[in-house]
Length: 458
Image (cartoon, rainbow, N blue to C red; front, side, top):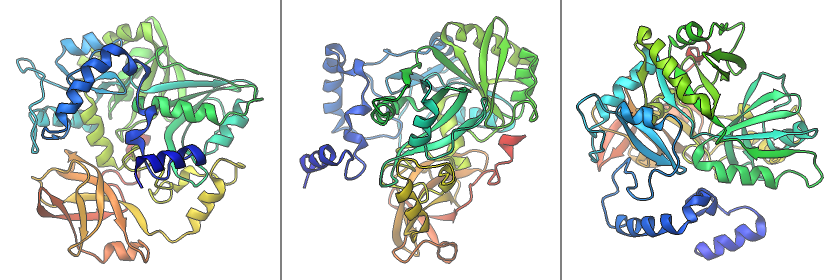
């Protein structure tokens, strides 16, 4: 059976029979259905079918449609932009005198060293990154708590000021969304998710609100810009600007507080996708450029670096943070991915609860593992076969160069029909097939960087 059968099952069951996100109409933004966009993009996509599929390749057509309020500032400072969810995003920054243009290769590309500097700024000092492309939804009303408790696998009936990492599960405990939920008021939440899955997640949210629920949902993405400030010196930098107390006592990890920077008021959310101390600053869009200028000026004292999405991604893979569409999808349960903690079975019923309980108790025939190549030269980019004692037992889901650990790192699925136990994992000899060559690898359930999660709670 082909796509027609899968689509029919999807219509009848309300769920795709397997992960079909690459053909899901919700992967597209409304503007991508305009005549102008289609006339440009269709001609390019046909030609790309017969081109080399280089990693990190960016579309050349249909560009420049969605820009953050920081776009021109970043462009003037050497940003090379990619696109996701229609958003122009700074992927890396070229130093002065270097043209910010990709030179594609299956080996280290021209931006490798520039991204290393950004990666290490996050790890050792402080970096600033534009995260405005994240989608932001507001869920509010008298029934907001009940609705969110039913949709979220985690307990989100938490005090105002808390931020909860959660999944939205389907009835079979497959992961439909991977996101954070912040309690903004007694009857109001903010959902923050990836820009590339905004349409998908909003659709899932609206479909699972009862018709008689007193709840209002709206997309606040255009109203809120996000500036991420991450690294060991992020607290010192932000406190010097805002005068706010951002200590562990005043603003612990997974909490938010109101702060002011110059003329602007904003929410400082202590969450991170790089695995370091830091905050996402959620700012009214019209104030974002002003706040950026203030941080940039104050950051000179701290040797602040502008960082791109490639550095964010290499940091998150080095840390072992999962990403929707790579490590989690409807084909996996949270327990497959080592994220069982997002399921709070004591907080009441939620969509997929019974299936999640079964998944928790079931034999784990596939589990997500952390991978590190022993040779520091080869690159992991994702989808490479993972071998155990010379036999293929899985594949790499995400790969990047871990600049702090000095080797290619990744995550991947380890499969065994008799169960993937700690003993099974540790008893094998592993390698990854990179460009046709076997590269020896270390495999673990623990992250390659800060496995105890101490850095984010500094």
